[in-house]
Amino acid sequence: MTTFGQDGYATYADFDSFSYDLIKHLKDENEMVWKLLKYKTPDAWELPNLTDSEKQALIYNGGEDGTKFNVFMDDGMPDVYTREDAILRISPFSIFPENRSIGTIMIRFEIYSHWKMNHLSNYKTRVDLVVKELLGLFNGKTFKGIGKLNFDRLVSTNTRLETSGQVPFKGKVFYMANKSN
Image (cartoon, rainbow, N blue to C red; front, side, top):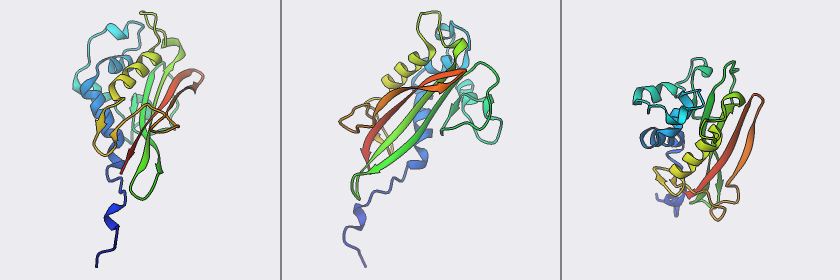
């Protein structure tokens, strides 16, 4: 027996792949962010690009000490960093259901840098350069399951960029959104 309207419900079938898909896109399409995460020196922005395996080694794979990694698919950190480092987190933040068929998906991007290594030799900060790169890479791009990511208050009034962090790490957090099913 068919229930009227049963096919009209949003399933968010790719929810568990959002973070992975975005990090994979970052891995394939951007070099600067990876250099800023791996190299701790002020000239990180002009050092050689990383190989695919070097990038993969920066992504947390579960189980091990999280402080050995720089890229995560969730928020929060149970392990304590005892060295100067830079950290990137990309994770689904929320889904606000508009109706049974469409919801606003919010993705959170977090970038943190130890304050001693945040300033670069090109008179920019590591955190702000990563934010610029991420916004340029993801804003207006379409991804499987998420749809077109937007940094646009017309899509959601929750899209924004904020300062974040706790000494000795400073950072920025920003939210991108899309209406999806």
